Image (cartoon, rainbow, N blue to C red; front, side, top):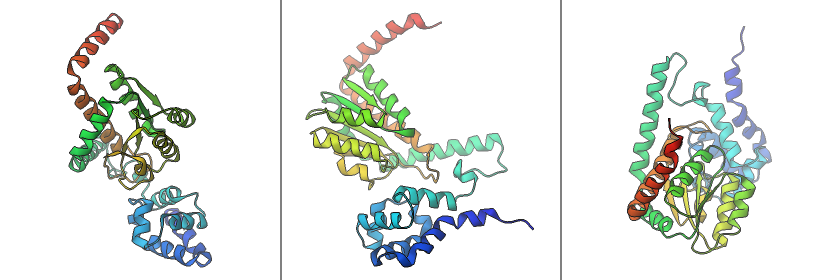
Amino acid sequence: MSVNTNNRVKASSLARIRSRLPALAAAEQKVAQWVLQHPEEVIHMSMAQVARECGVSDTTVLRFCRAAGFQGYTDMKLSIVQDLATPTQLVHDDISEDDDAITIARKVFHSNIRALQDTLEVLDGDALTKAVDMIASAKRILIIGVGTSGPIVQDMYHMFFRLGFNVRAQTDSYLQLMEAALVEEGDVVVGISQSGSSTDPVLTLAEAKRNGAGVIVITGNAESPITQYADVTLLAVSRETRAEAIASRIAQSTLVDALYVAVSFQNMDLAIRNEKRIWNAVLPKTI
């Protein structure tokens, strides 16, 4: 007789919470009960949203997570994601085990298109205009992010470097914090984090804000910790379960493209002149 290991695994995180329930303080028990009753909702919510649903503070939610044996809220959420998701969902939400290569490709394309459509629907024109104006008038621009946000950080750096802006990019957690310590009023720091909960970008933007820099955030969660330091928040929306998102990167990248084109239009002569100079410089390297 075979053992259904999937059912055993699926119970792990919620079972851990149930086992700690009697030892929790009253307010923490309230959070635990809500999480146990709404696990599918938790995986799409920020800590602030859960706190609001439970009528408690963010700190109480965090205390509950740690008392239940998790490192923090994100650790708990990812553990629940892994428990509830099918094996294929850990790779991509829409695929199934019997899909062939072309079916998988179609589903990935549709997922990315949906992320772009969703992001466009929630795009705030006033926020985008403010972000464009902040970048166009910045003395210096620092772009930061970690993990899977790193390639988007580098893409944005390359775009604004071509416009001749004084721009830097940092994906190292220590170096970005050191650079944020040296920014000042008139500078702009752009933080890219899909979850908005990664410790390093949050610490970096907090430091930049203390030093008077303007802050632009590109994230998938409007109520995540990183947004509390933002002068402008641009949302990149995706409906993904997995921790390392795929479609959200497309949405983030497209937001960066939109910023670049809009800023270029404010500096059209400069943009054209620099593109010609760059092209002439790299032309000898083409075959």
